[in-house]
Length: 185
Image (cartoon, rainbow, N blue to C red; front, top):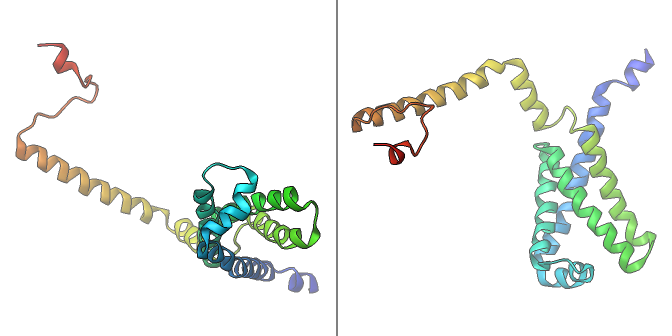
């Protein structure tokens, strides 16, 4: 009885929610700080690594932290957001080790963000996420999604056929070589 109470999936899913939201909410301000003075960030963190296009890479780092954080908070495209954060944290850890050695005070926050993003990639977003809702909607009624695409394709195909009939263009054969009119008379 106690096993089912303590190990019920609702607690696990709530833990995923807390991990996602706290990681995203605490990391997002780092991206905004980078954007606040992008040239300073490029000079201090990217140029010492001798990477090309330091300002562009600084914008990419800032956007991955901001966008990845929002994706984590919303639970939408969660693994993609966590992958963006993981990439940025990998470079940040490399920078910290190269410039300061194994300084635990510099590495601890980076390692926590790295571990959080890595865990989210491996375990997924949990039940309290937009990803889960989308998956459940598709799983419960997959034909509705397919019918939407079929309806859209039939509308586009019928409009193409109407345009071709208005112009009185002969229908092309699908197996015909595209430049055969240039090669033959």
